[in-house]
Length: 142
Image (cartoon, rainbow, N blue to C red; front, side):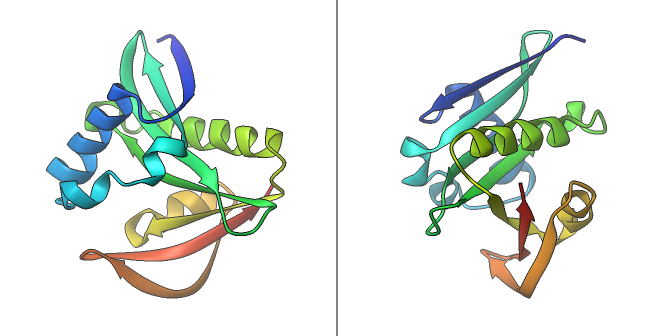
């Protein structure tokens, strides 16, 4: 399978469609909250397999000048178990480094904490609810 990426400012339609399918339809998050003001200025990665959109994630500056935040990492169900989440995460980390970040943070669903730990992230603080779903803050030095 041929892999290709786009990383673009503003929310591409393919990224929107993946997030709608995964977070709103599959996981039950509120569609009005899923798409927010961050989307307009964030960098969005979309990974394509053989020309078909497979996964997405976004990157945006944090409050700290040397830190960026990754969010909304999602892969269509039919493309899971192919390590695409790691590919998207790696691409966003590389972009953050190019933009001057020395660390990256994210708000992980607790059910995905193990995935992020395998990618080098460390959890900190207490778990908290984002809508109905338990999350934990995680960071990684770049």
